[in-house]
Amino acid sequence: MSEPVTLSFARLTAAPKGVLIVLTDESLAFGTQTQKVLKGADAALTRAFDAERFKGKAWSTVDLLAPAGLDAPRLVVISVGKAGDLKASDFLKLGGLIAGKIPASAREASVLLDLPGTKIAAEAAADVALGIRLRSYSFDRYKTKKKDENERAGLAVTLLVSDEAGSKKAAIARDAVGDGVLFARDLVNEPANVLDPPEFARRAEEHLSAVGVEVEVLDDEALSRAGLRALLGVGQGSIKESRVVVMRWNGGPKDEAPVAFIGKGVTFDTGGISIKPAAGMEDMKGDMGGAACVTGLLYALAARKAKVNAVGLIGLVENMPDGAAQRPGDIVTSLSGQTIEIINTDAEGRLVLCDVLWYAKERFKPKFMIDLATLTGAILVALGSEYAGLFSNDDALSERLAKAGQETGERVWRLPLGPEYDKLIDSKFADMKNTGGRNAGSITAAQFLQRFVEKTPWAHLDVAGTAMSSPASDINKSWGSGWGVRLLDQLVKDNYEG
Image: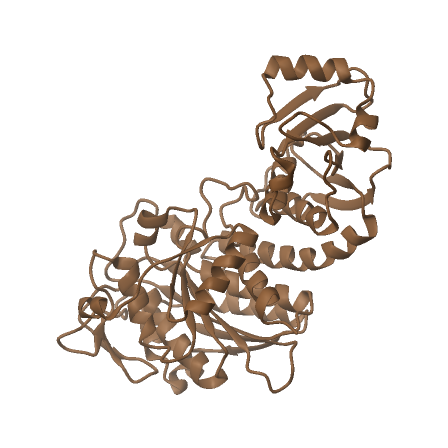
């Protein structure tokens, strides 16, 4: 992976260097310090605004090369629209937009975080920095060709702010979360011939142990002894052994119950015997996006020393159509003792999650459980890539997730659960079957999972449309998005720390 940008803060009155980025609003007004910096370039700006018919619409930009009256090689003007209406997630978006406007040939850039009549707070400045960092990420580990001379080799961005010390302090926690997001992106972007279940487990242990997370890896033998037969059934057609990784961050009171996060980690999903069509199957290396998020989240919580007890569990398998693979019509007994008829081996994620959910519930007695999974194509049909599907047995937890989603821009949309859907997954031969067919596909998948949580407050996030970002978003130009790390970190910070 590549993160070719270094970020720093300086006082608003410091002399800018390199490409200059300034902000305006819907009235095309500038902040006091920006007016001083742009003095002498008034005529050039007026001509550029007229030529571009620039009216100050939110997120519109004007780009001037070698502007008359300024030493800067390039001037970029970005409108934020109504400055008083800006939300926290808007500053992250602004950072992404800024990063996208800096040319690849630039080596230095300065951003004046200055608006007329509105002081940009330290927290907002730190969000802008995080947005720049996330947008600047790319995954180029396997490119062997020499970089083109115009391709970015390194960029230093200085944010000129009204509260330098406060911005630096606020950025510390943002950096921890950013590290978690980028770790999750790296995992999703890796090819499946490199990142198989044992390698995923190894990387999780290596990275998280370094920040104080207790990591326990359960191999095939341990999983068999423990009785996670539904999970093992998914991986039995692969030459790669399955794994469950348990990650514990103990930042809260010693005897306080943890919050629990569970991730689906199918490192490659062929569909098994119910094999998928060839077109687009290469994307199934990303079917571990939920596990990547949980791993990145635990890293972020530990790196910022979150005052919470948190446990993350990820079920890692590879779903392959081997002679040893499970078949449609097979019946497996889950860890809970409930039996499952396999109707479609491509409905494998819920088989992984049901065992890990039960294991988490029984072993850790958590305050709540949230699972994340690239579970159904149906959620893409319903919500596209703008929202993750939310299913829950707890209204308070759902409301907190929705609020955190609005704050971070990683939004969720709640969909229904109800006993009426149970009949779609009732089986003639077992306690349930692993798919209810085409209708209400995302709902019946969640309804299946609900049978393994009992009374524990629980939420299921179907991230099939958000974990892999195509087309690229405001803060991500790579394929894997790291979606969910910021959402769940915000949930913890708002509700469960201290």
